[in-house]
Length: 403
Image 1 (tube, rainbow, N blue to C red):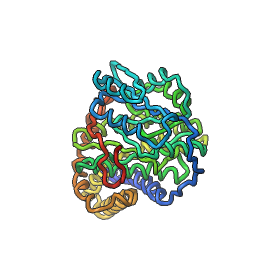
Image 2 (tube, rainbow, N blue to C red; image 1 turned 90 degrees about the vertical axis):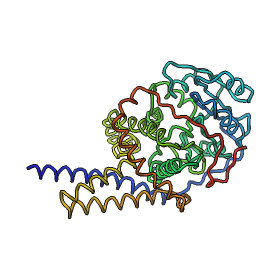
Image 3 (cartoon, one colour; image 1 turned 60 degrees about the vertical axis):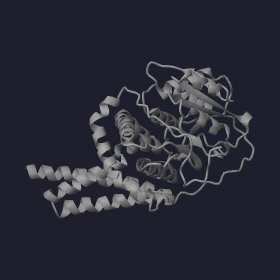
């Protein structure tokens, strides 16, 4: 009886892993068949844009971010920059106010992005068509706003830009950049290619101004506000468009400690939203809203990509002692398919000899991800702040320099 239960457990685990690998594989292949939508070229702006930058204790980098946003190729009188400065030093505030940006000073007992954004919307009394949310460390490509303008002028109501590595100065930063590139192809480009809404990332995302203001007023979470936001947007029938050529340069994690803290927050968000929105996602599926079901249920049922490597490795190893022929062969073959899937999902420009030092960091990343599972509850009601230090783009893959 015990042996039968063990076999059943292993086959159930295998079925779950097969589902997860096939899910990633389908979207990874879909990304390669994505057709670029031909948009009418709007050389002149038709949309007024508000760039909202919620920033918590980001004194060391916020000035470089503000200068990057001020240098974008878009008429100055058609966009404004709002720096939402939470717990900044007074000297930084003074320097920011010397720039042509709007500074909204805030301070909360328990800081969150949602609180900062909602306070900004309360204070903004100017009319805009689009609200673009960026993180304090983000730099945008010169033509970012023109691409957003063009997409909205052609009917888009929500977009997610393509986040790429701002820095590749350490092996961990490179690994983090590879991870985001894979996620872009699976959850954004691949999803759009299959007729589904793109997932958002939390920054470099733009929405109709009034709709975002109304939706955010209903959200008050410590972390994962972007997930709640996308659920509400997609539930209204809007599909989020992924703009692959609109680049958002995002600072990548360059050390193990920061990596673990960030993943701990992401794991908590995934588990929390799966539990909270599973049944609602199924209800939306019955109503024909496959995008909502995909974002609320399927995205969260499959494990994080790094964690799936660990699961496959452990079950492959143990299956050798349980059923060395069928089970061991099945898990080993599935592991190979999964690594091929990740390779398919990796953009061609990232495939080079320089990958090796980053890949060597993968075992450590797996250990950190697994250990995060045991301390995930500690992140439940705590705002985990990631410290940023990079003031310039140092990614040689992109021929874009700060002005």
